Image (cartoon, rainbow, N blue to C red):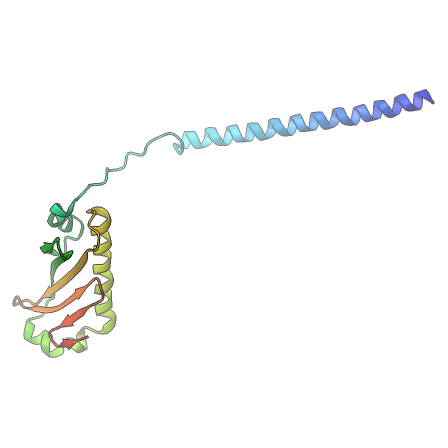
Length: 166
């Protein structure tokens, strides 16, 4: 009977020994996989290496003209009123005023005008973030080829046209 007890203990000890070896092997494999993954990512430059990105330019309310010319170069800075937060920029259309007044409603549909509302909202967000100007309203004035305002669009959604209010 003692041999049975010894063989049972020896079987239990063998099983425990195998379990301990399995845990050690599993732990070693996990550590090795983690090490290989870390080394691979390090070799690819994901960890610890600063990217050589161009440093972001900083602007202020005093440099809005420069900001517009560098970031929205299709438009021209006109003015900025710090008290009201109104930034006016100027663009152009390729029509004389008389033609725009006559055919504007047919040429410049609601989707077209709303795309400019979205655009000036993006400019307003950029000014707010990049120039640290809170509560900025951007107004885009689009001029005809003969120098008259065809329509204005602002970041609050206000649209004014030479052929009538939208």
